[in-house]
Length: 446
Ligand code: CAO
Image 1 (cartoon, rainbow, N blue to C red):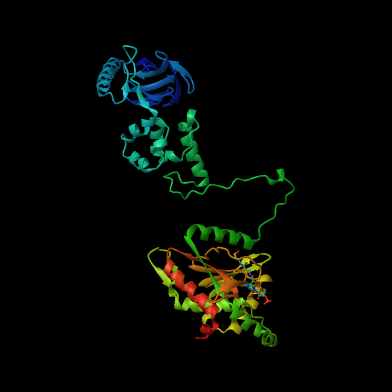
Image 2: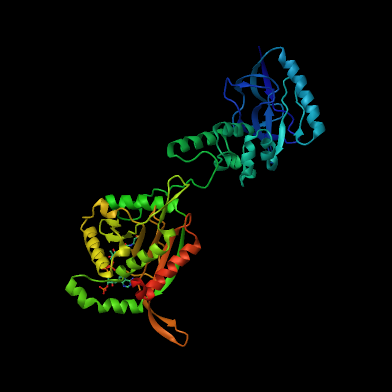
């Protein structure tokens, strides 16, 4: 065995360059032409390949050092009889590469043991490496692959670990990605579940944790169980369901005067009829006529479940959080009966007395903020249901009758639906029917 000292080769005109990457660890084996280290000038990176097969004894430079032609950079332990051969091979490689002249390849400075520096224009760097492995072609598909600024050893490490370098921030000079960056990325991915493969856009950046007490007095309050379940459900539904929300206004002028005319009878019956009862009846009727809304996607992604029953969930705002009791068989119920259930469920919900079965089996949800205010909002689908109707506060508005503007009580509606199974046409028909039913409640009796 012999110890060979590798020196900085001719730098193609550059006087001094920075060592930006040491490709090996002490004791690592290296083959002929494998990258020993990477140098960088203002214009290019230079991969210094080994002229020998052997083992790294030690580097004589460190990352960040500035070196010039002829400076010793590493010691390799090699077979004594291969060193001369390698030197000759290096010279042959040199000749061939100079002739090809695609990459600037420069002569070894020393007669023996001189490496051949492959100088890569920074802009061409990705292309050069891309051709070396089929794995890289997938990187090339990535939009920002051309922007990757990393040496061959780092690219190889990334390939071995299945890391997409476009996702790895570089901490080296001018943003160059170093081995440590790749290792840190993998460690982070393992600890927080961030996917280490190609960036498919599903990795959700974390919201930063801030110490708000630096801005003023604060108090940490525990979430209620309902708040925690709601937070989880909302995030799950928001992330899983491709939402579309369609808007319309229903003219409820007649409906509301009829509703008010029921007041005296309601007092006798002990039932208060609000617009919510008509809304639930209208939704149930429209659900029966538009069966596409009364489905759920099967977990296998191959089928859907068509429901033959018609249960409507109703969001109720309680001090402990949001709950959704379900009014069963709403399509077969009359307005008095629905109004009675709305009031009972609202009371039960606010007293925290709903049972799990009260909140199961819904086909579609109504979220009414009409008593609170606002002229529109985009509700989140209560998956695995496919749709939810958000209702805002009815207001008198001037509506053109064809001859004149008339004061009409207009109810803003927002229908959010799961676009995986519901198309705009289905939603348009569903919404149009609800508007029609509310605008002329005689249709609810048909
Ligand atoms: N426009 C104008 N007024 C409306 C209205 C509307 N869309 N909807 C109801 N009102 C009126 C009612 O008529 C009633 O007034 P009167 O007594 O004078 O008739 C008043 O508002 C109060 O209604 P209410 O809230 O007591 O009862 P309700 O049947 O309208 O609603 C319930 C019941 C349970 C839906 C409601 O109390 C509730 O909790 N809503 C909040 C739902 C919610 O939080 N949704 C968001 C979910 S996502 O965060």
